[in-house]
Image (cartoon, rainbow, N blue to C red; front, side, top):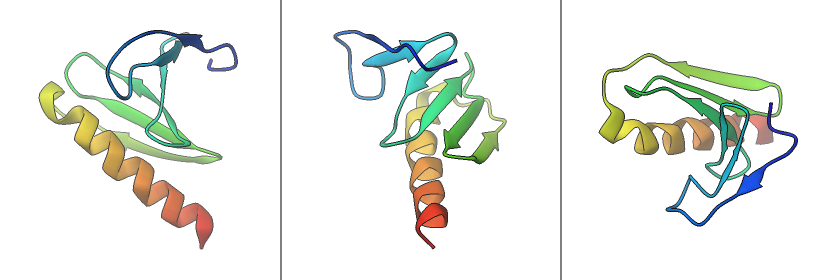
Length: 74
């Protein structure tokens, strides 16, 4: 779903996309729903967030990606 990134001129977290996926934050990638639902992937680990907070989704994705990076480094 994210092997062929399309690069675009956009704000942080929206510069790479592929079939339903967005690159980032960091080394992670994510599926990002219309109302703030998220699946954040890092290597083989995944965080799933069900929310109704589209405006806060980028901050939540960053927190989830940071947690996954810490998990992978331990």
